Length: 76
Image 1: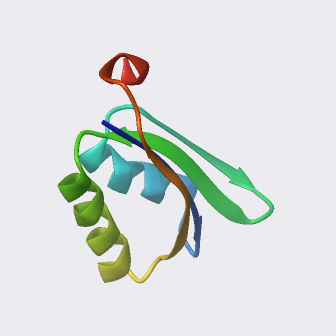
Image 2: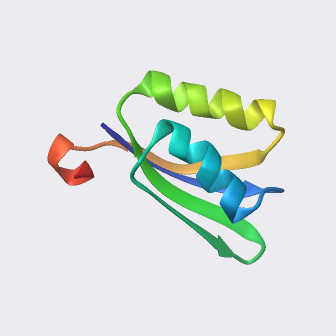
């Protein structure tokens, strides 16, 4: 399981949460200084790559702050 933290621009909190929910059911999304931030868990690197492709397809500016592997228990 992977824990990821991302910063996005040119997207609403609601829209980012909607996109992330396709890939992760455990997520937090918030707005700070006109940027949208999110932390979320994904089960695999291939799901994370799918999310990246979705963000790129929707022309959303994004930057990952952290991607780390975590124990299965931490995601619960």
